[in-house]
Image (cartoon, rainbow, N blue to C red; front, top):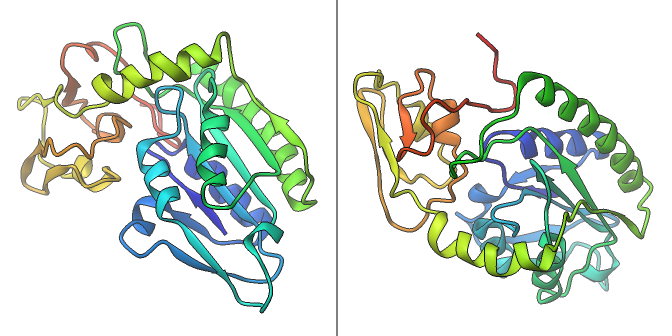
Length: 266
C-alpha cells in the first residue's frame, strides 16, 4: 500500500503512478486520518510513503499520520520489519533534511526505509515575496526530468532494491530544516493571510472542495471563509485551483501565477 499527501497534484501523480506500476492501493492521508490508521499487511506487501516538502520538513499532516500509524499482518508470525518500505519526496527545489526527519518518525513506529527518492516537480509555493510558480518552459523541463526519475525509482521499488537514495538536499540542509523550518512551521504556515477578492469570486465552491483539511467554510453559492483553527497546511490548493484567481495570500501573491498538476493553460 502507498500512503500519500498532495495539495496541488504533484505528489498525487507520483503516488498514483507508483500504485499502478506496483498494483498496490494508494491511500490519501487526510482520508486515512478520519479512521484509526490501522492497516492489515498482506504477505510481501510493500509500504510506500509519498509527500511534498513543507518548509524543508515533512508536512505536519504526514507526521501526525505516522504518529498514529499501526500495522498487523495477515500471515501469522509476519512482522512489519519484514516488509519493503520506501519514500518518495517531492519538492520544487531542495528537501534539506526532510528524509532524515521522516526516517526518525518512522523509526519510532518500528519501521525503516530501504529506498528514498527526491522528485523535483514544478513549484507551487507562493507564500513568500520571492517565491512564484515556474515559467512554462521550466515546468515542462521539470516534468520531463521527474518522469524519467520516477521511472528509475519505480523500477527500484518493483525490484525491492535496498540502498537506493536519491536525495536533493541543497546547501546547509541542517540550517534549512532546523531553524528555518521551525520558523516556517510556527509562523509562516497559516491560513490567516488568505482573503478573497469579492469582485472576482463567482462562489463556485471549488476552493472548499479541494482543501485537503477542510479548513474552508463555503461551497457552491458562498464565498470562502477560512476557519483559522490551526489545521491549514499552506499547501495553496485553494489559491491554485480558483478558476478566477480570486484568492490572495495577503499581498504576497499579487500578480503571481497559478499551478496544479494537469492544469490546462488558457
